[in-house]
Image (tube, rainbow, N blue to C red; front, side):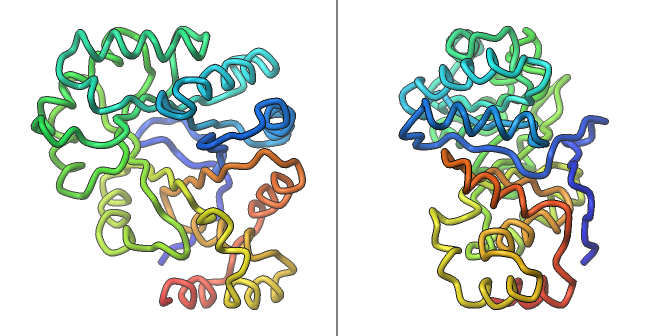
Length: 269
């Protein structure tokens, strides 16, 4: 394995890179507190936020719009996701996308993802329908979420002008299933992985192996868990936090890397 030491990660085959740690927004409880934390992050080295129309029934996209007001649109790479029910036609996709943008209070997102495959429509059809968000200027880039290798492969050959640049999936040091096939495939195809639930809702904090390795580096289990992910090529981790102290801990996962021996140790369990 080649360790990626860069704290910026390329988006697909584009020439654009964003911070290797982003901020997730699933299940935000206190938007006022989260606003302060997100503004701090976006003025101290983190430059990307992930959201979705289903988060808070649209309220979380409105929250991201408030963050934009505070820090400026040019300072944030915004990813949002569309529910698969909208993928039945280009008109439905476009109508839904405009609602996303209205809630976000912006003209265009940086990255629009299909939240998960619509099981009632062939991958080729839903991706062709979804491409309209790129063609109509609602998104600078498009991608997918929760797609298997086979589904991703079909998606890659379904667009006409846009490229699939990201696959957002569940990936953590405690859930390494994608390392068997999906991650190697994405590295080969130059597709970026956005890893959601990278801290397993706090479970990594109580992991004895992460704690033991962390002591070698003067780092916490959370920092080791995130560093394991971002040491892999093509991976961006998107943990969620509303607490400034937790954010500081998360940001401490950057600027260093685990030794290969420890990456292999964690990869084997």
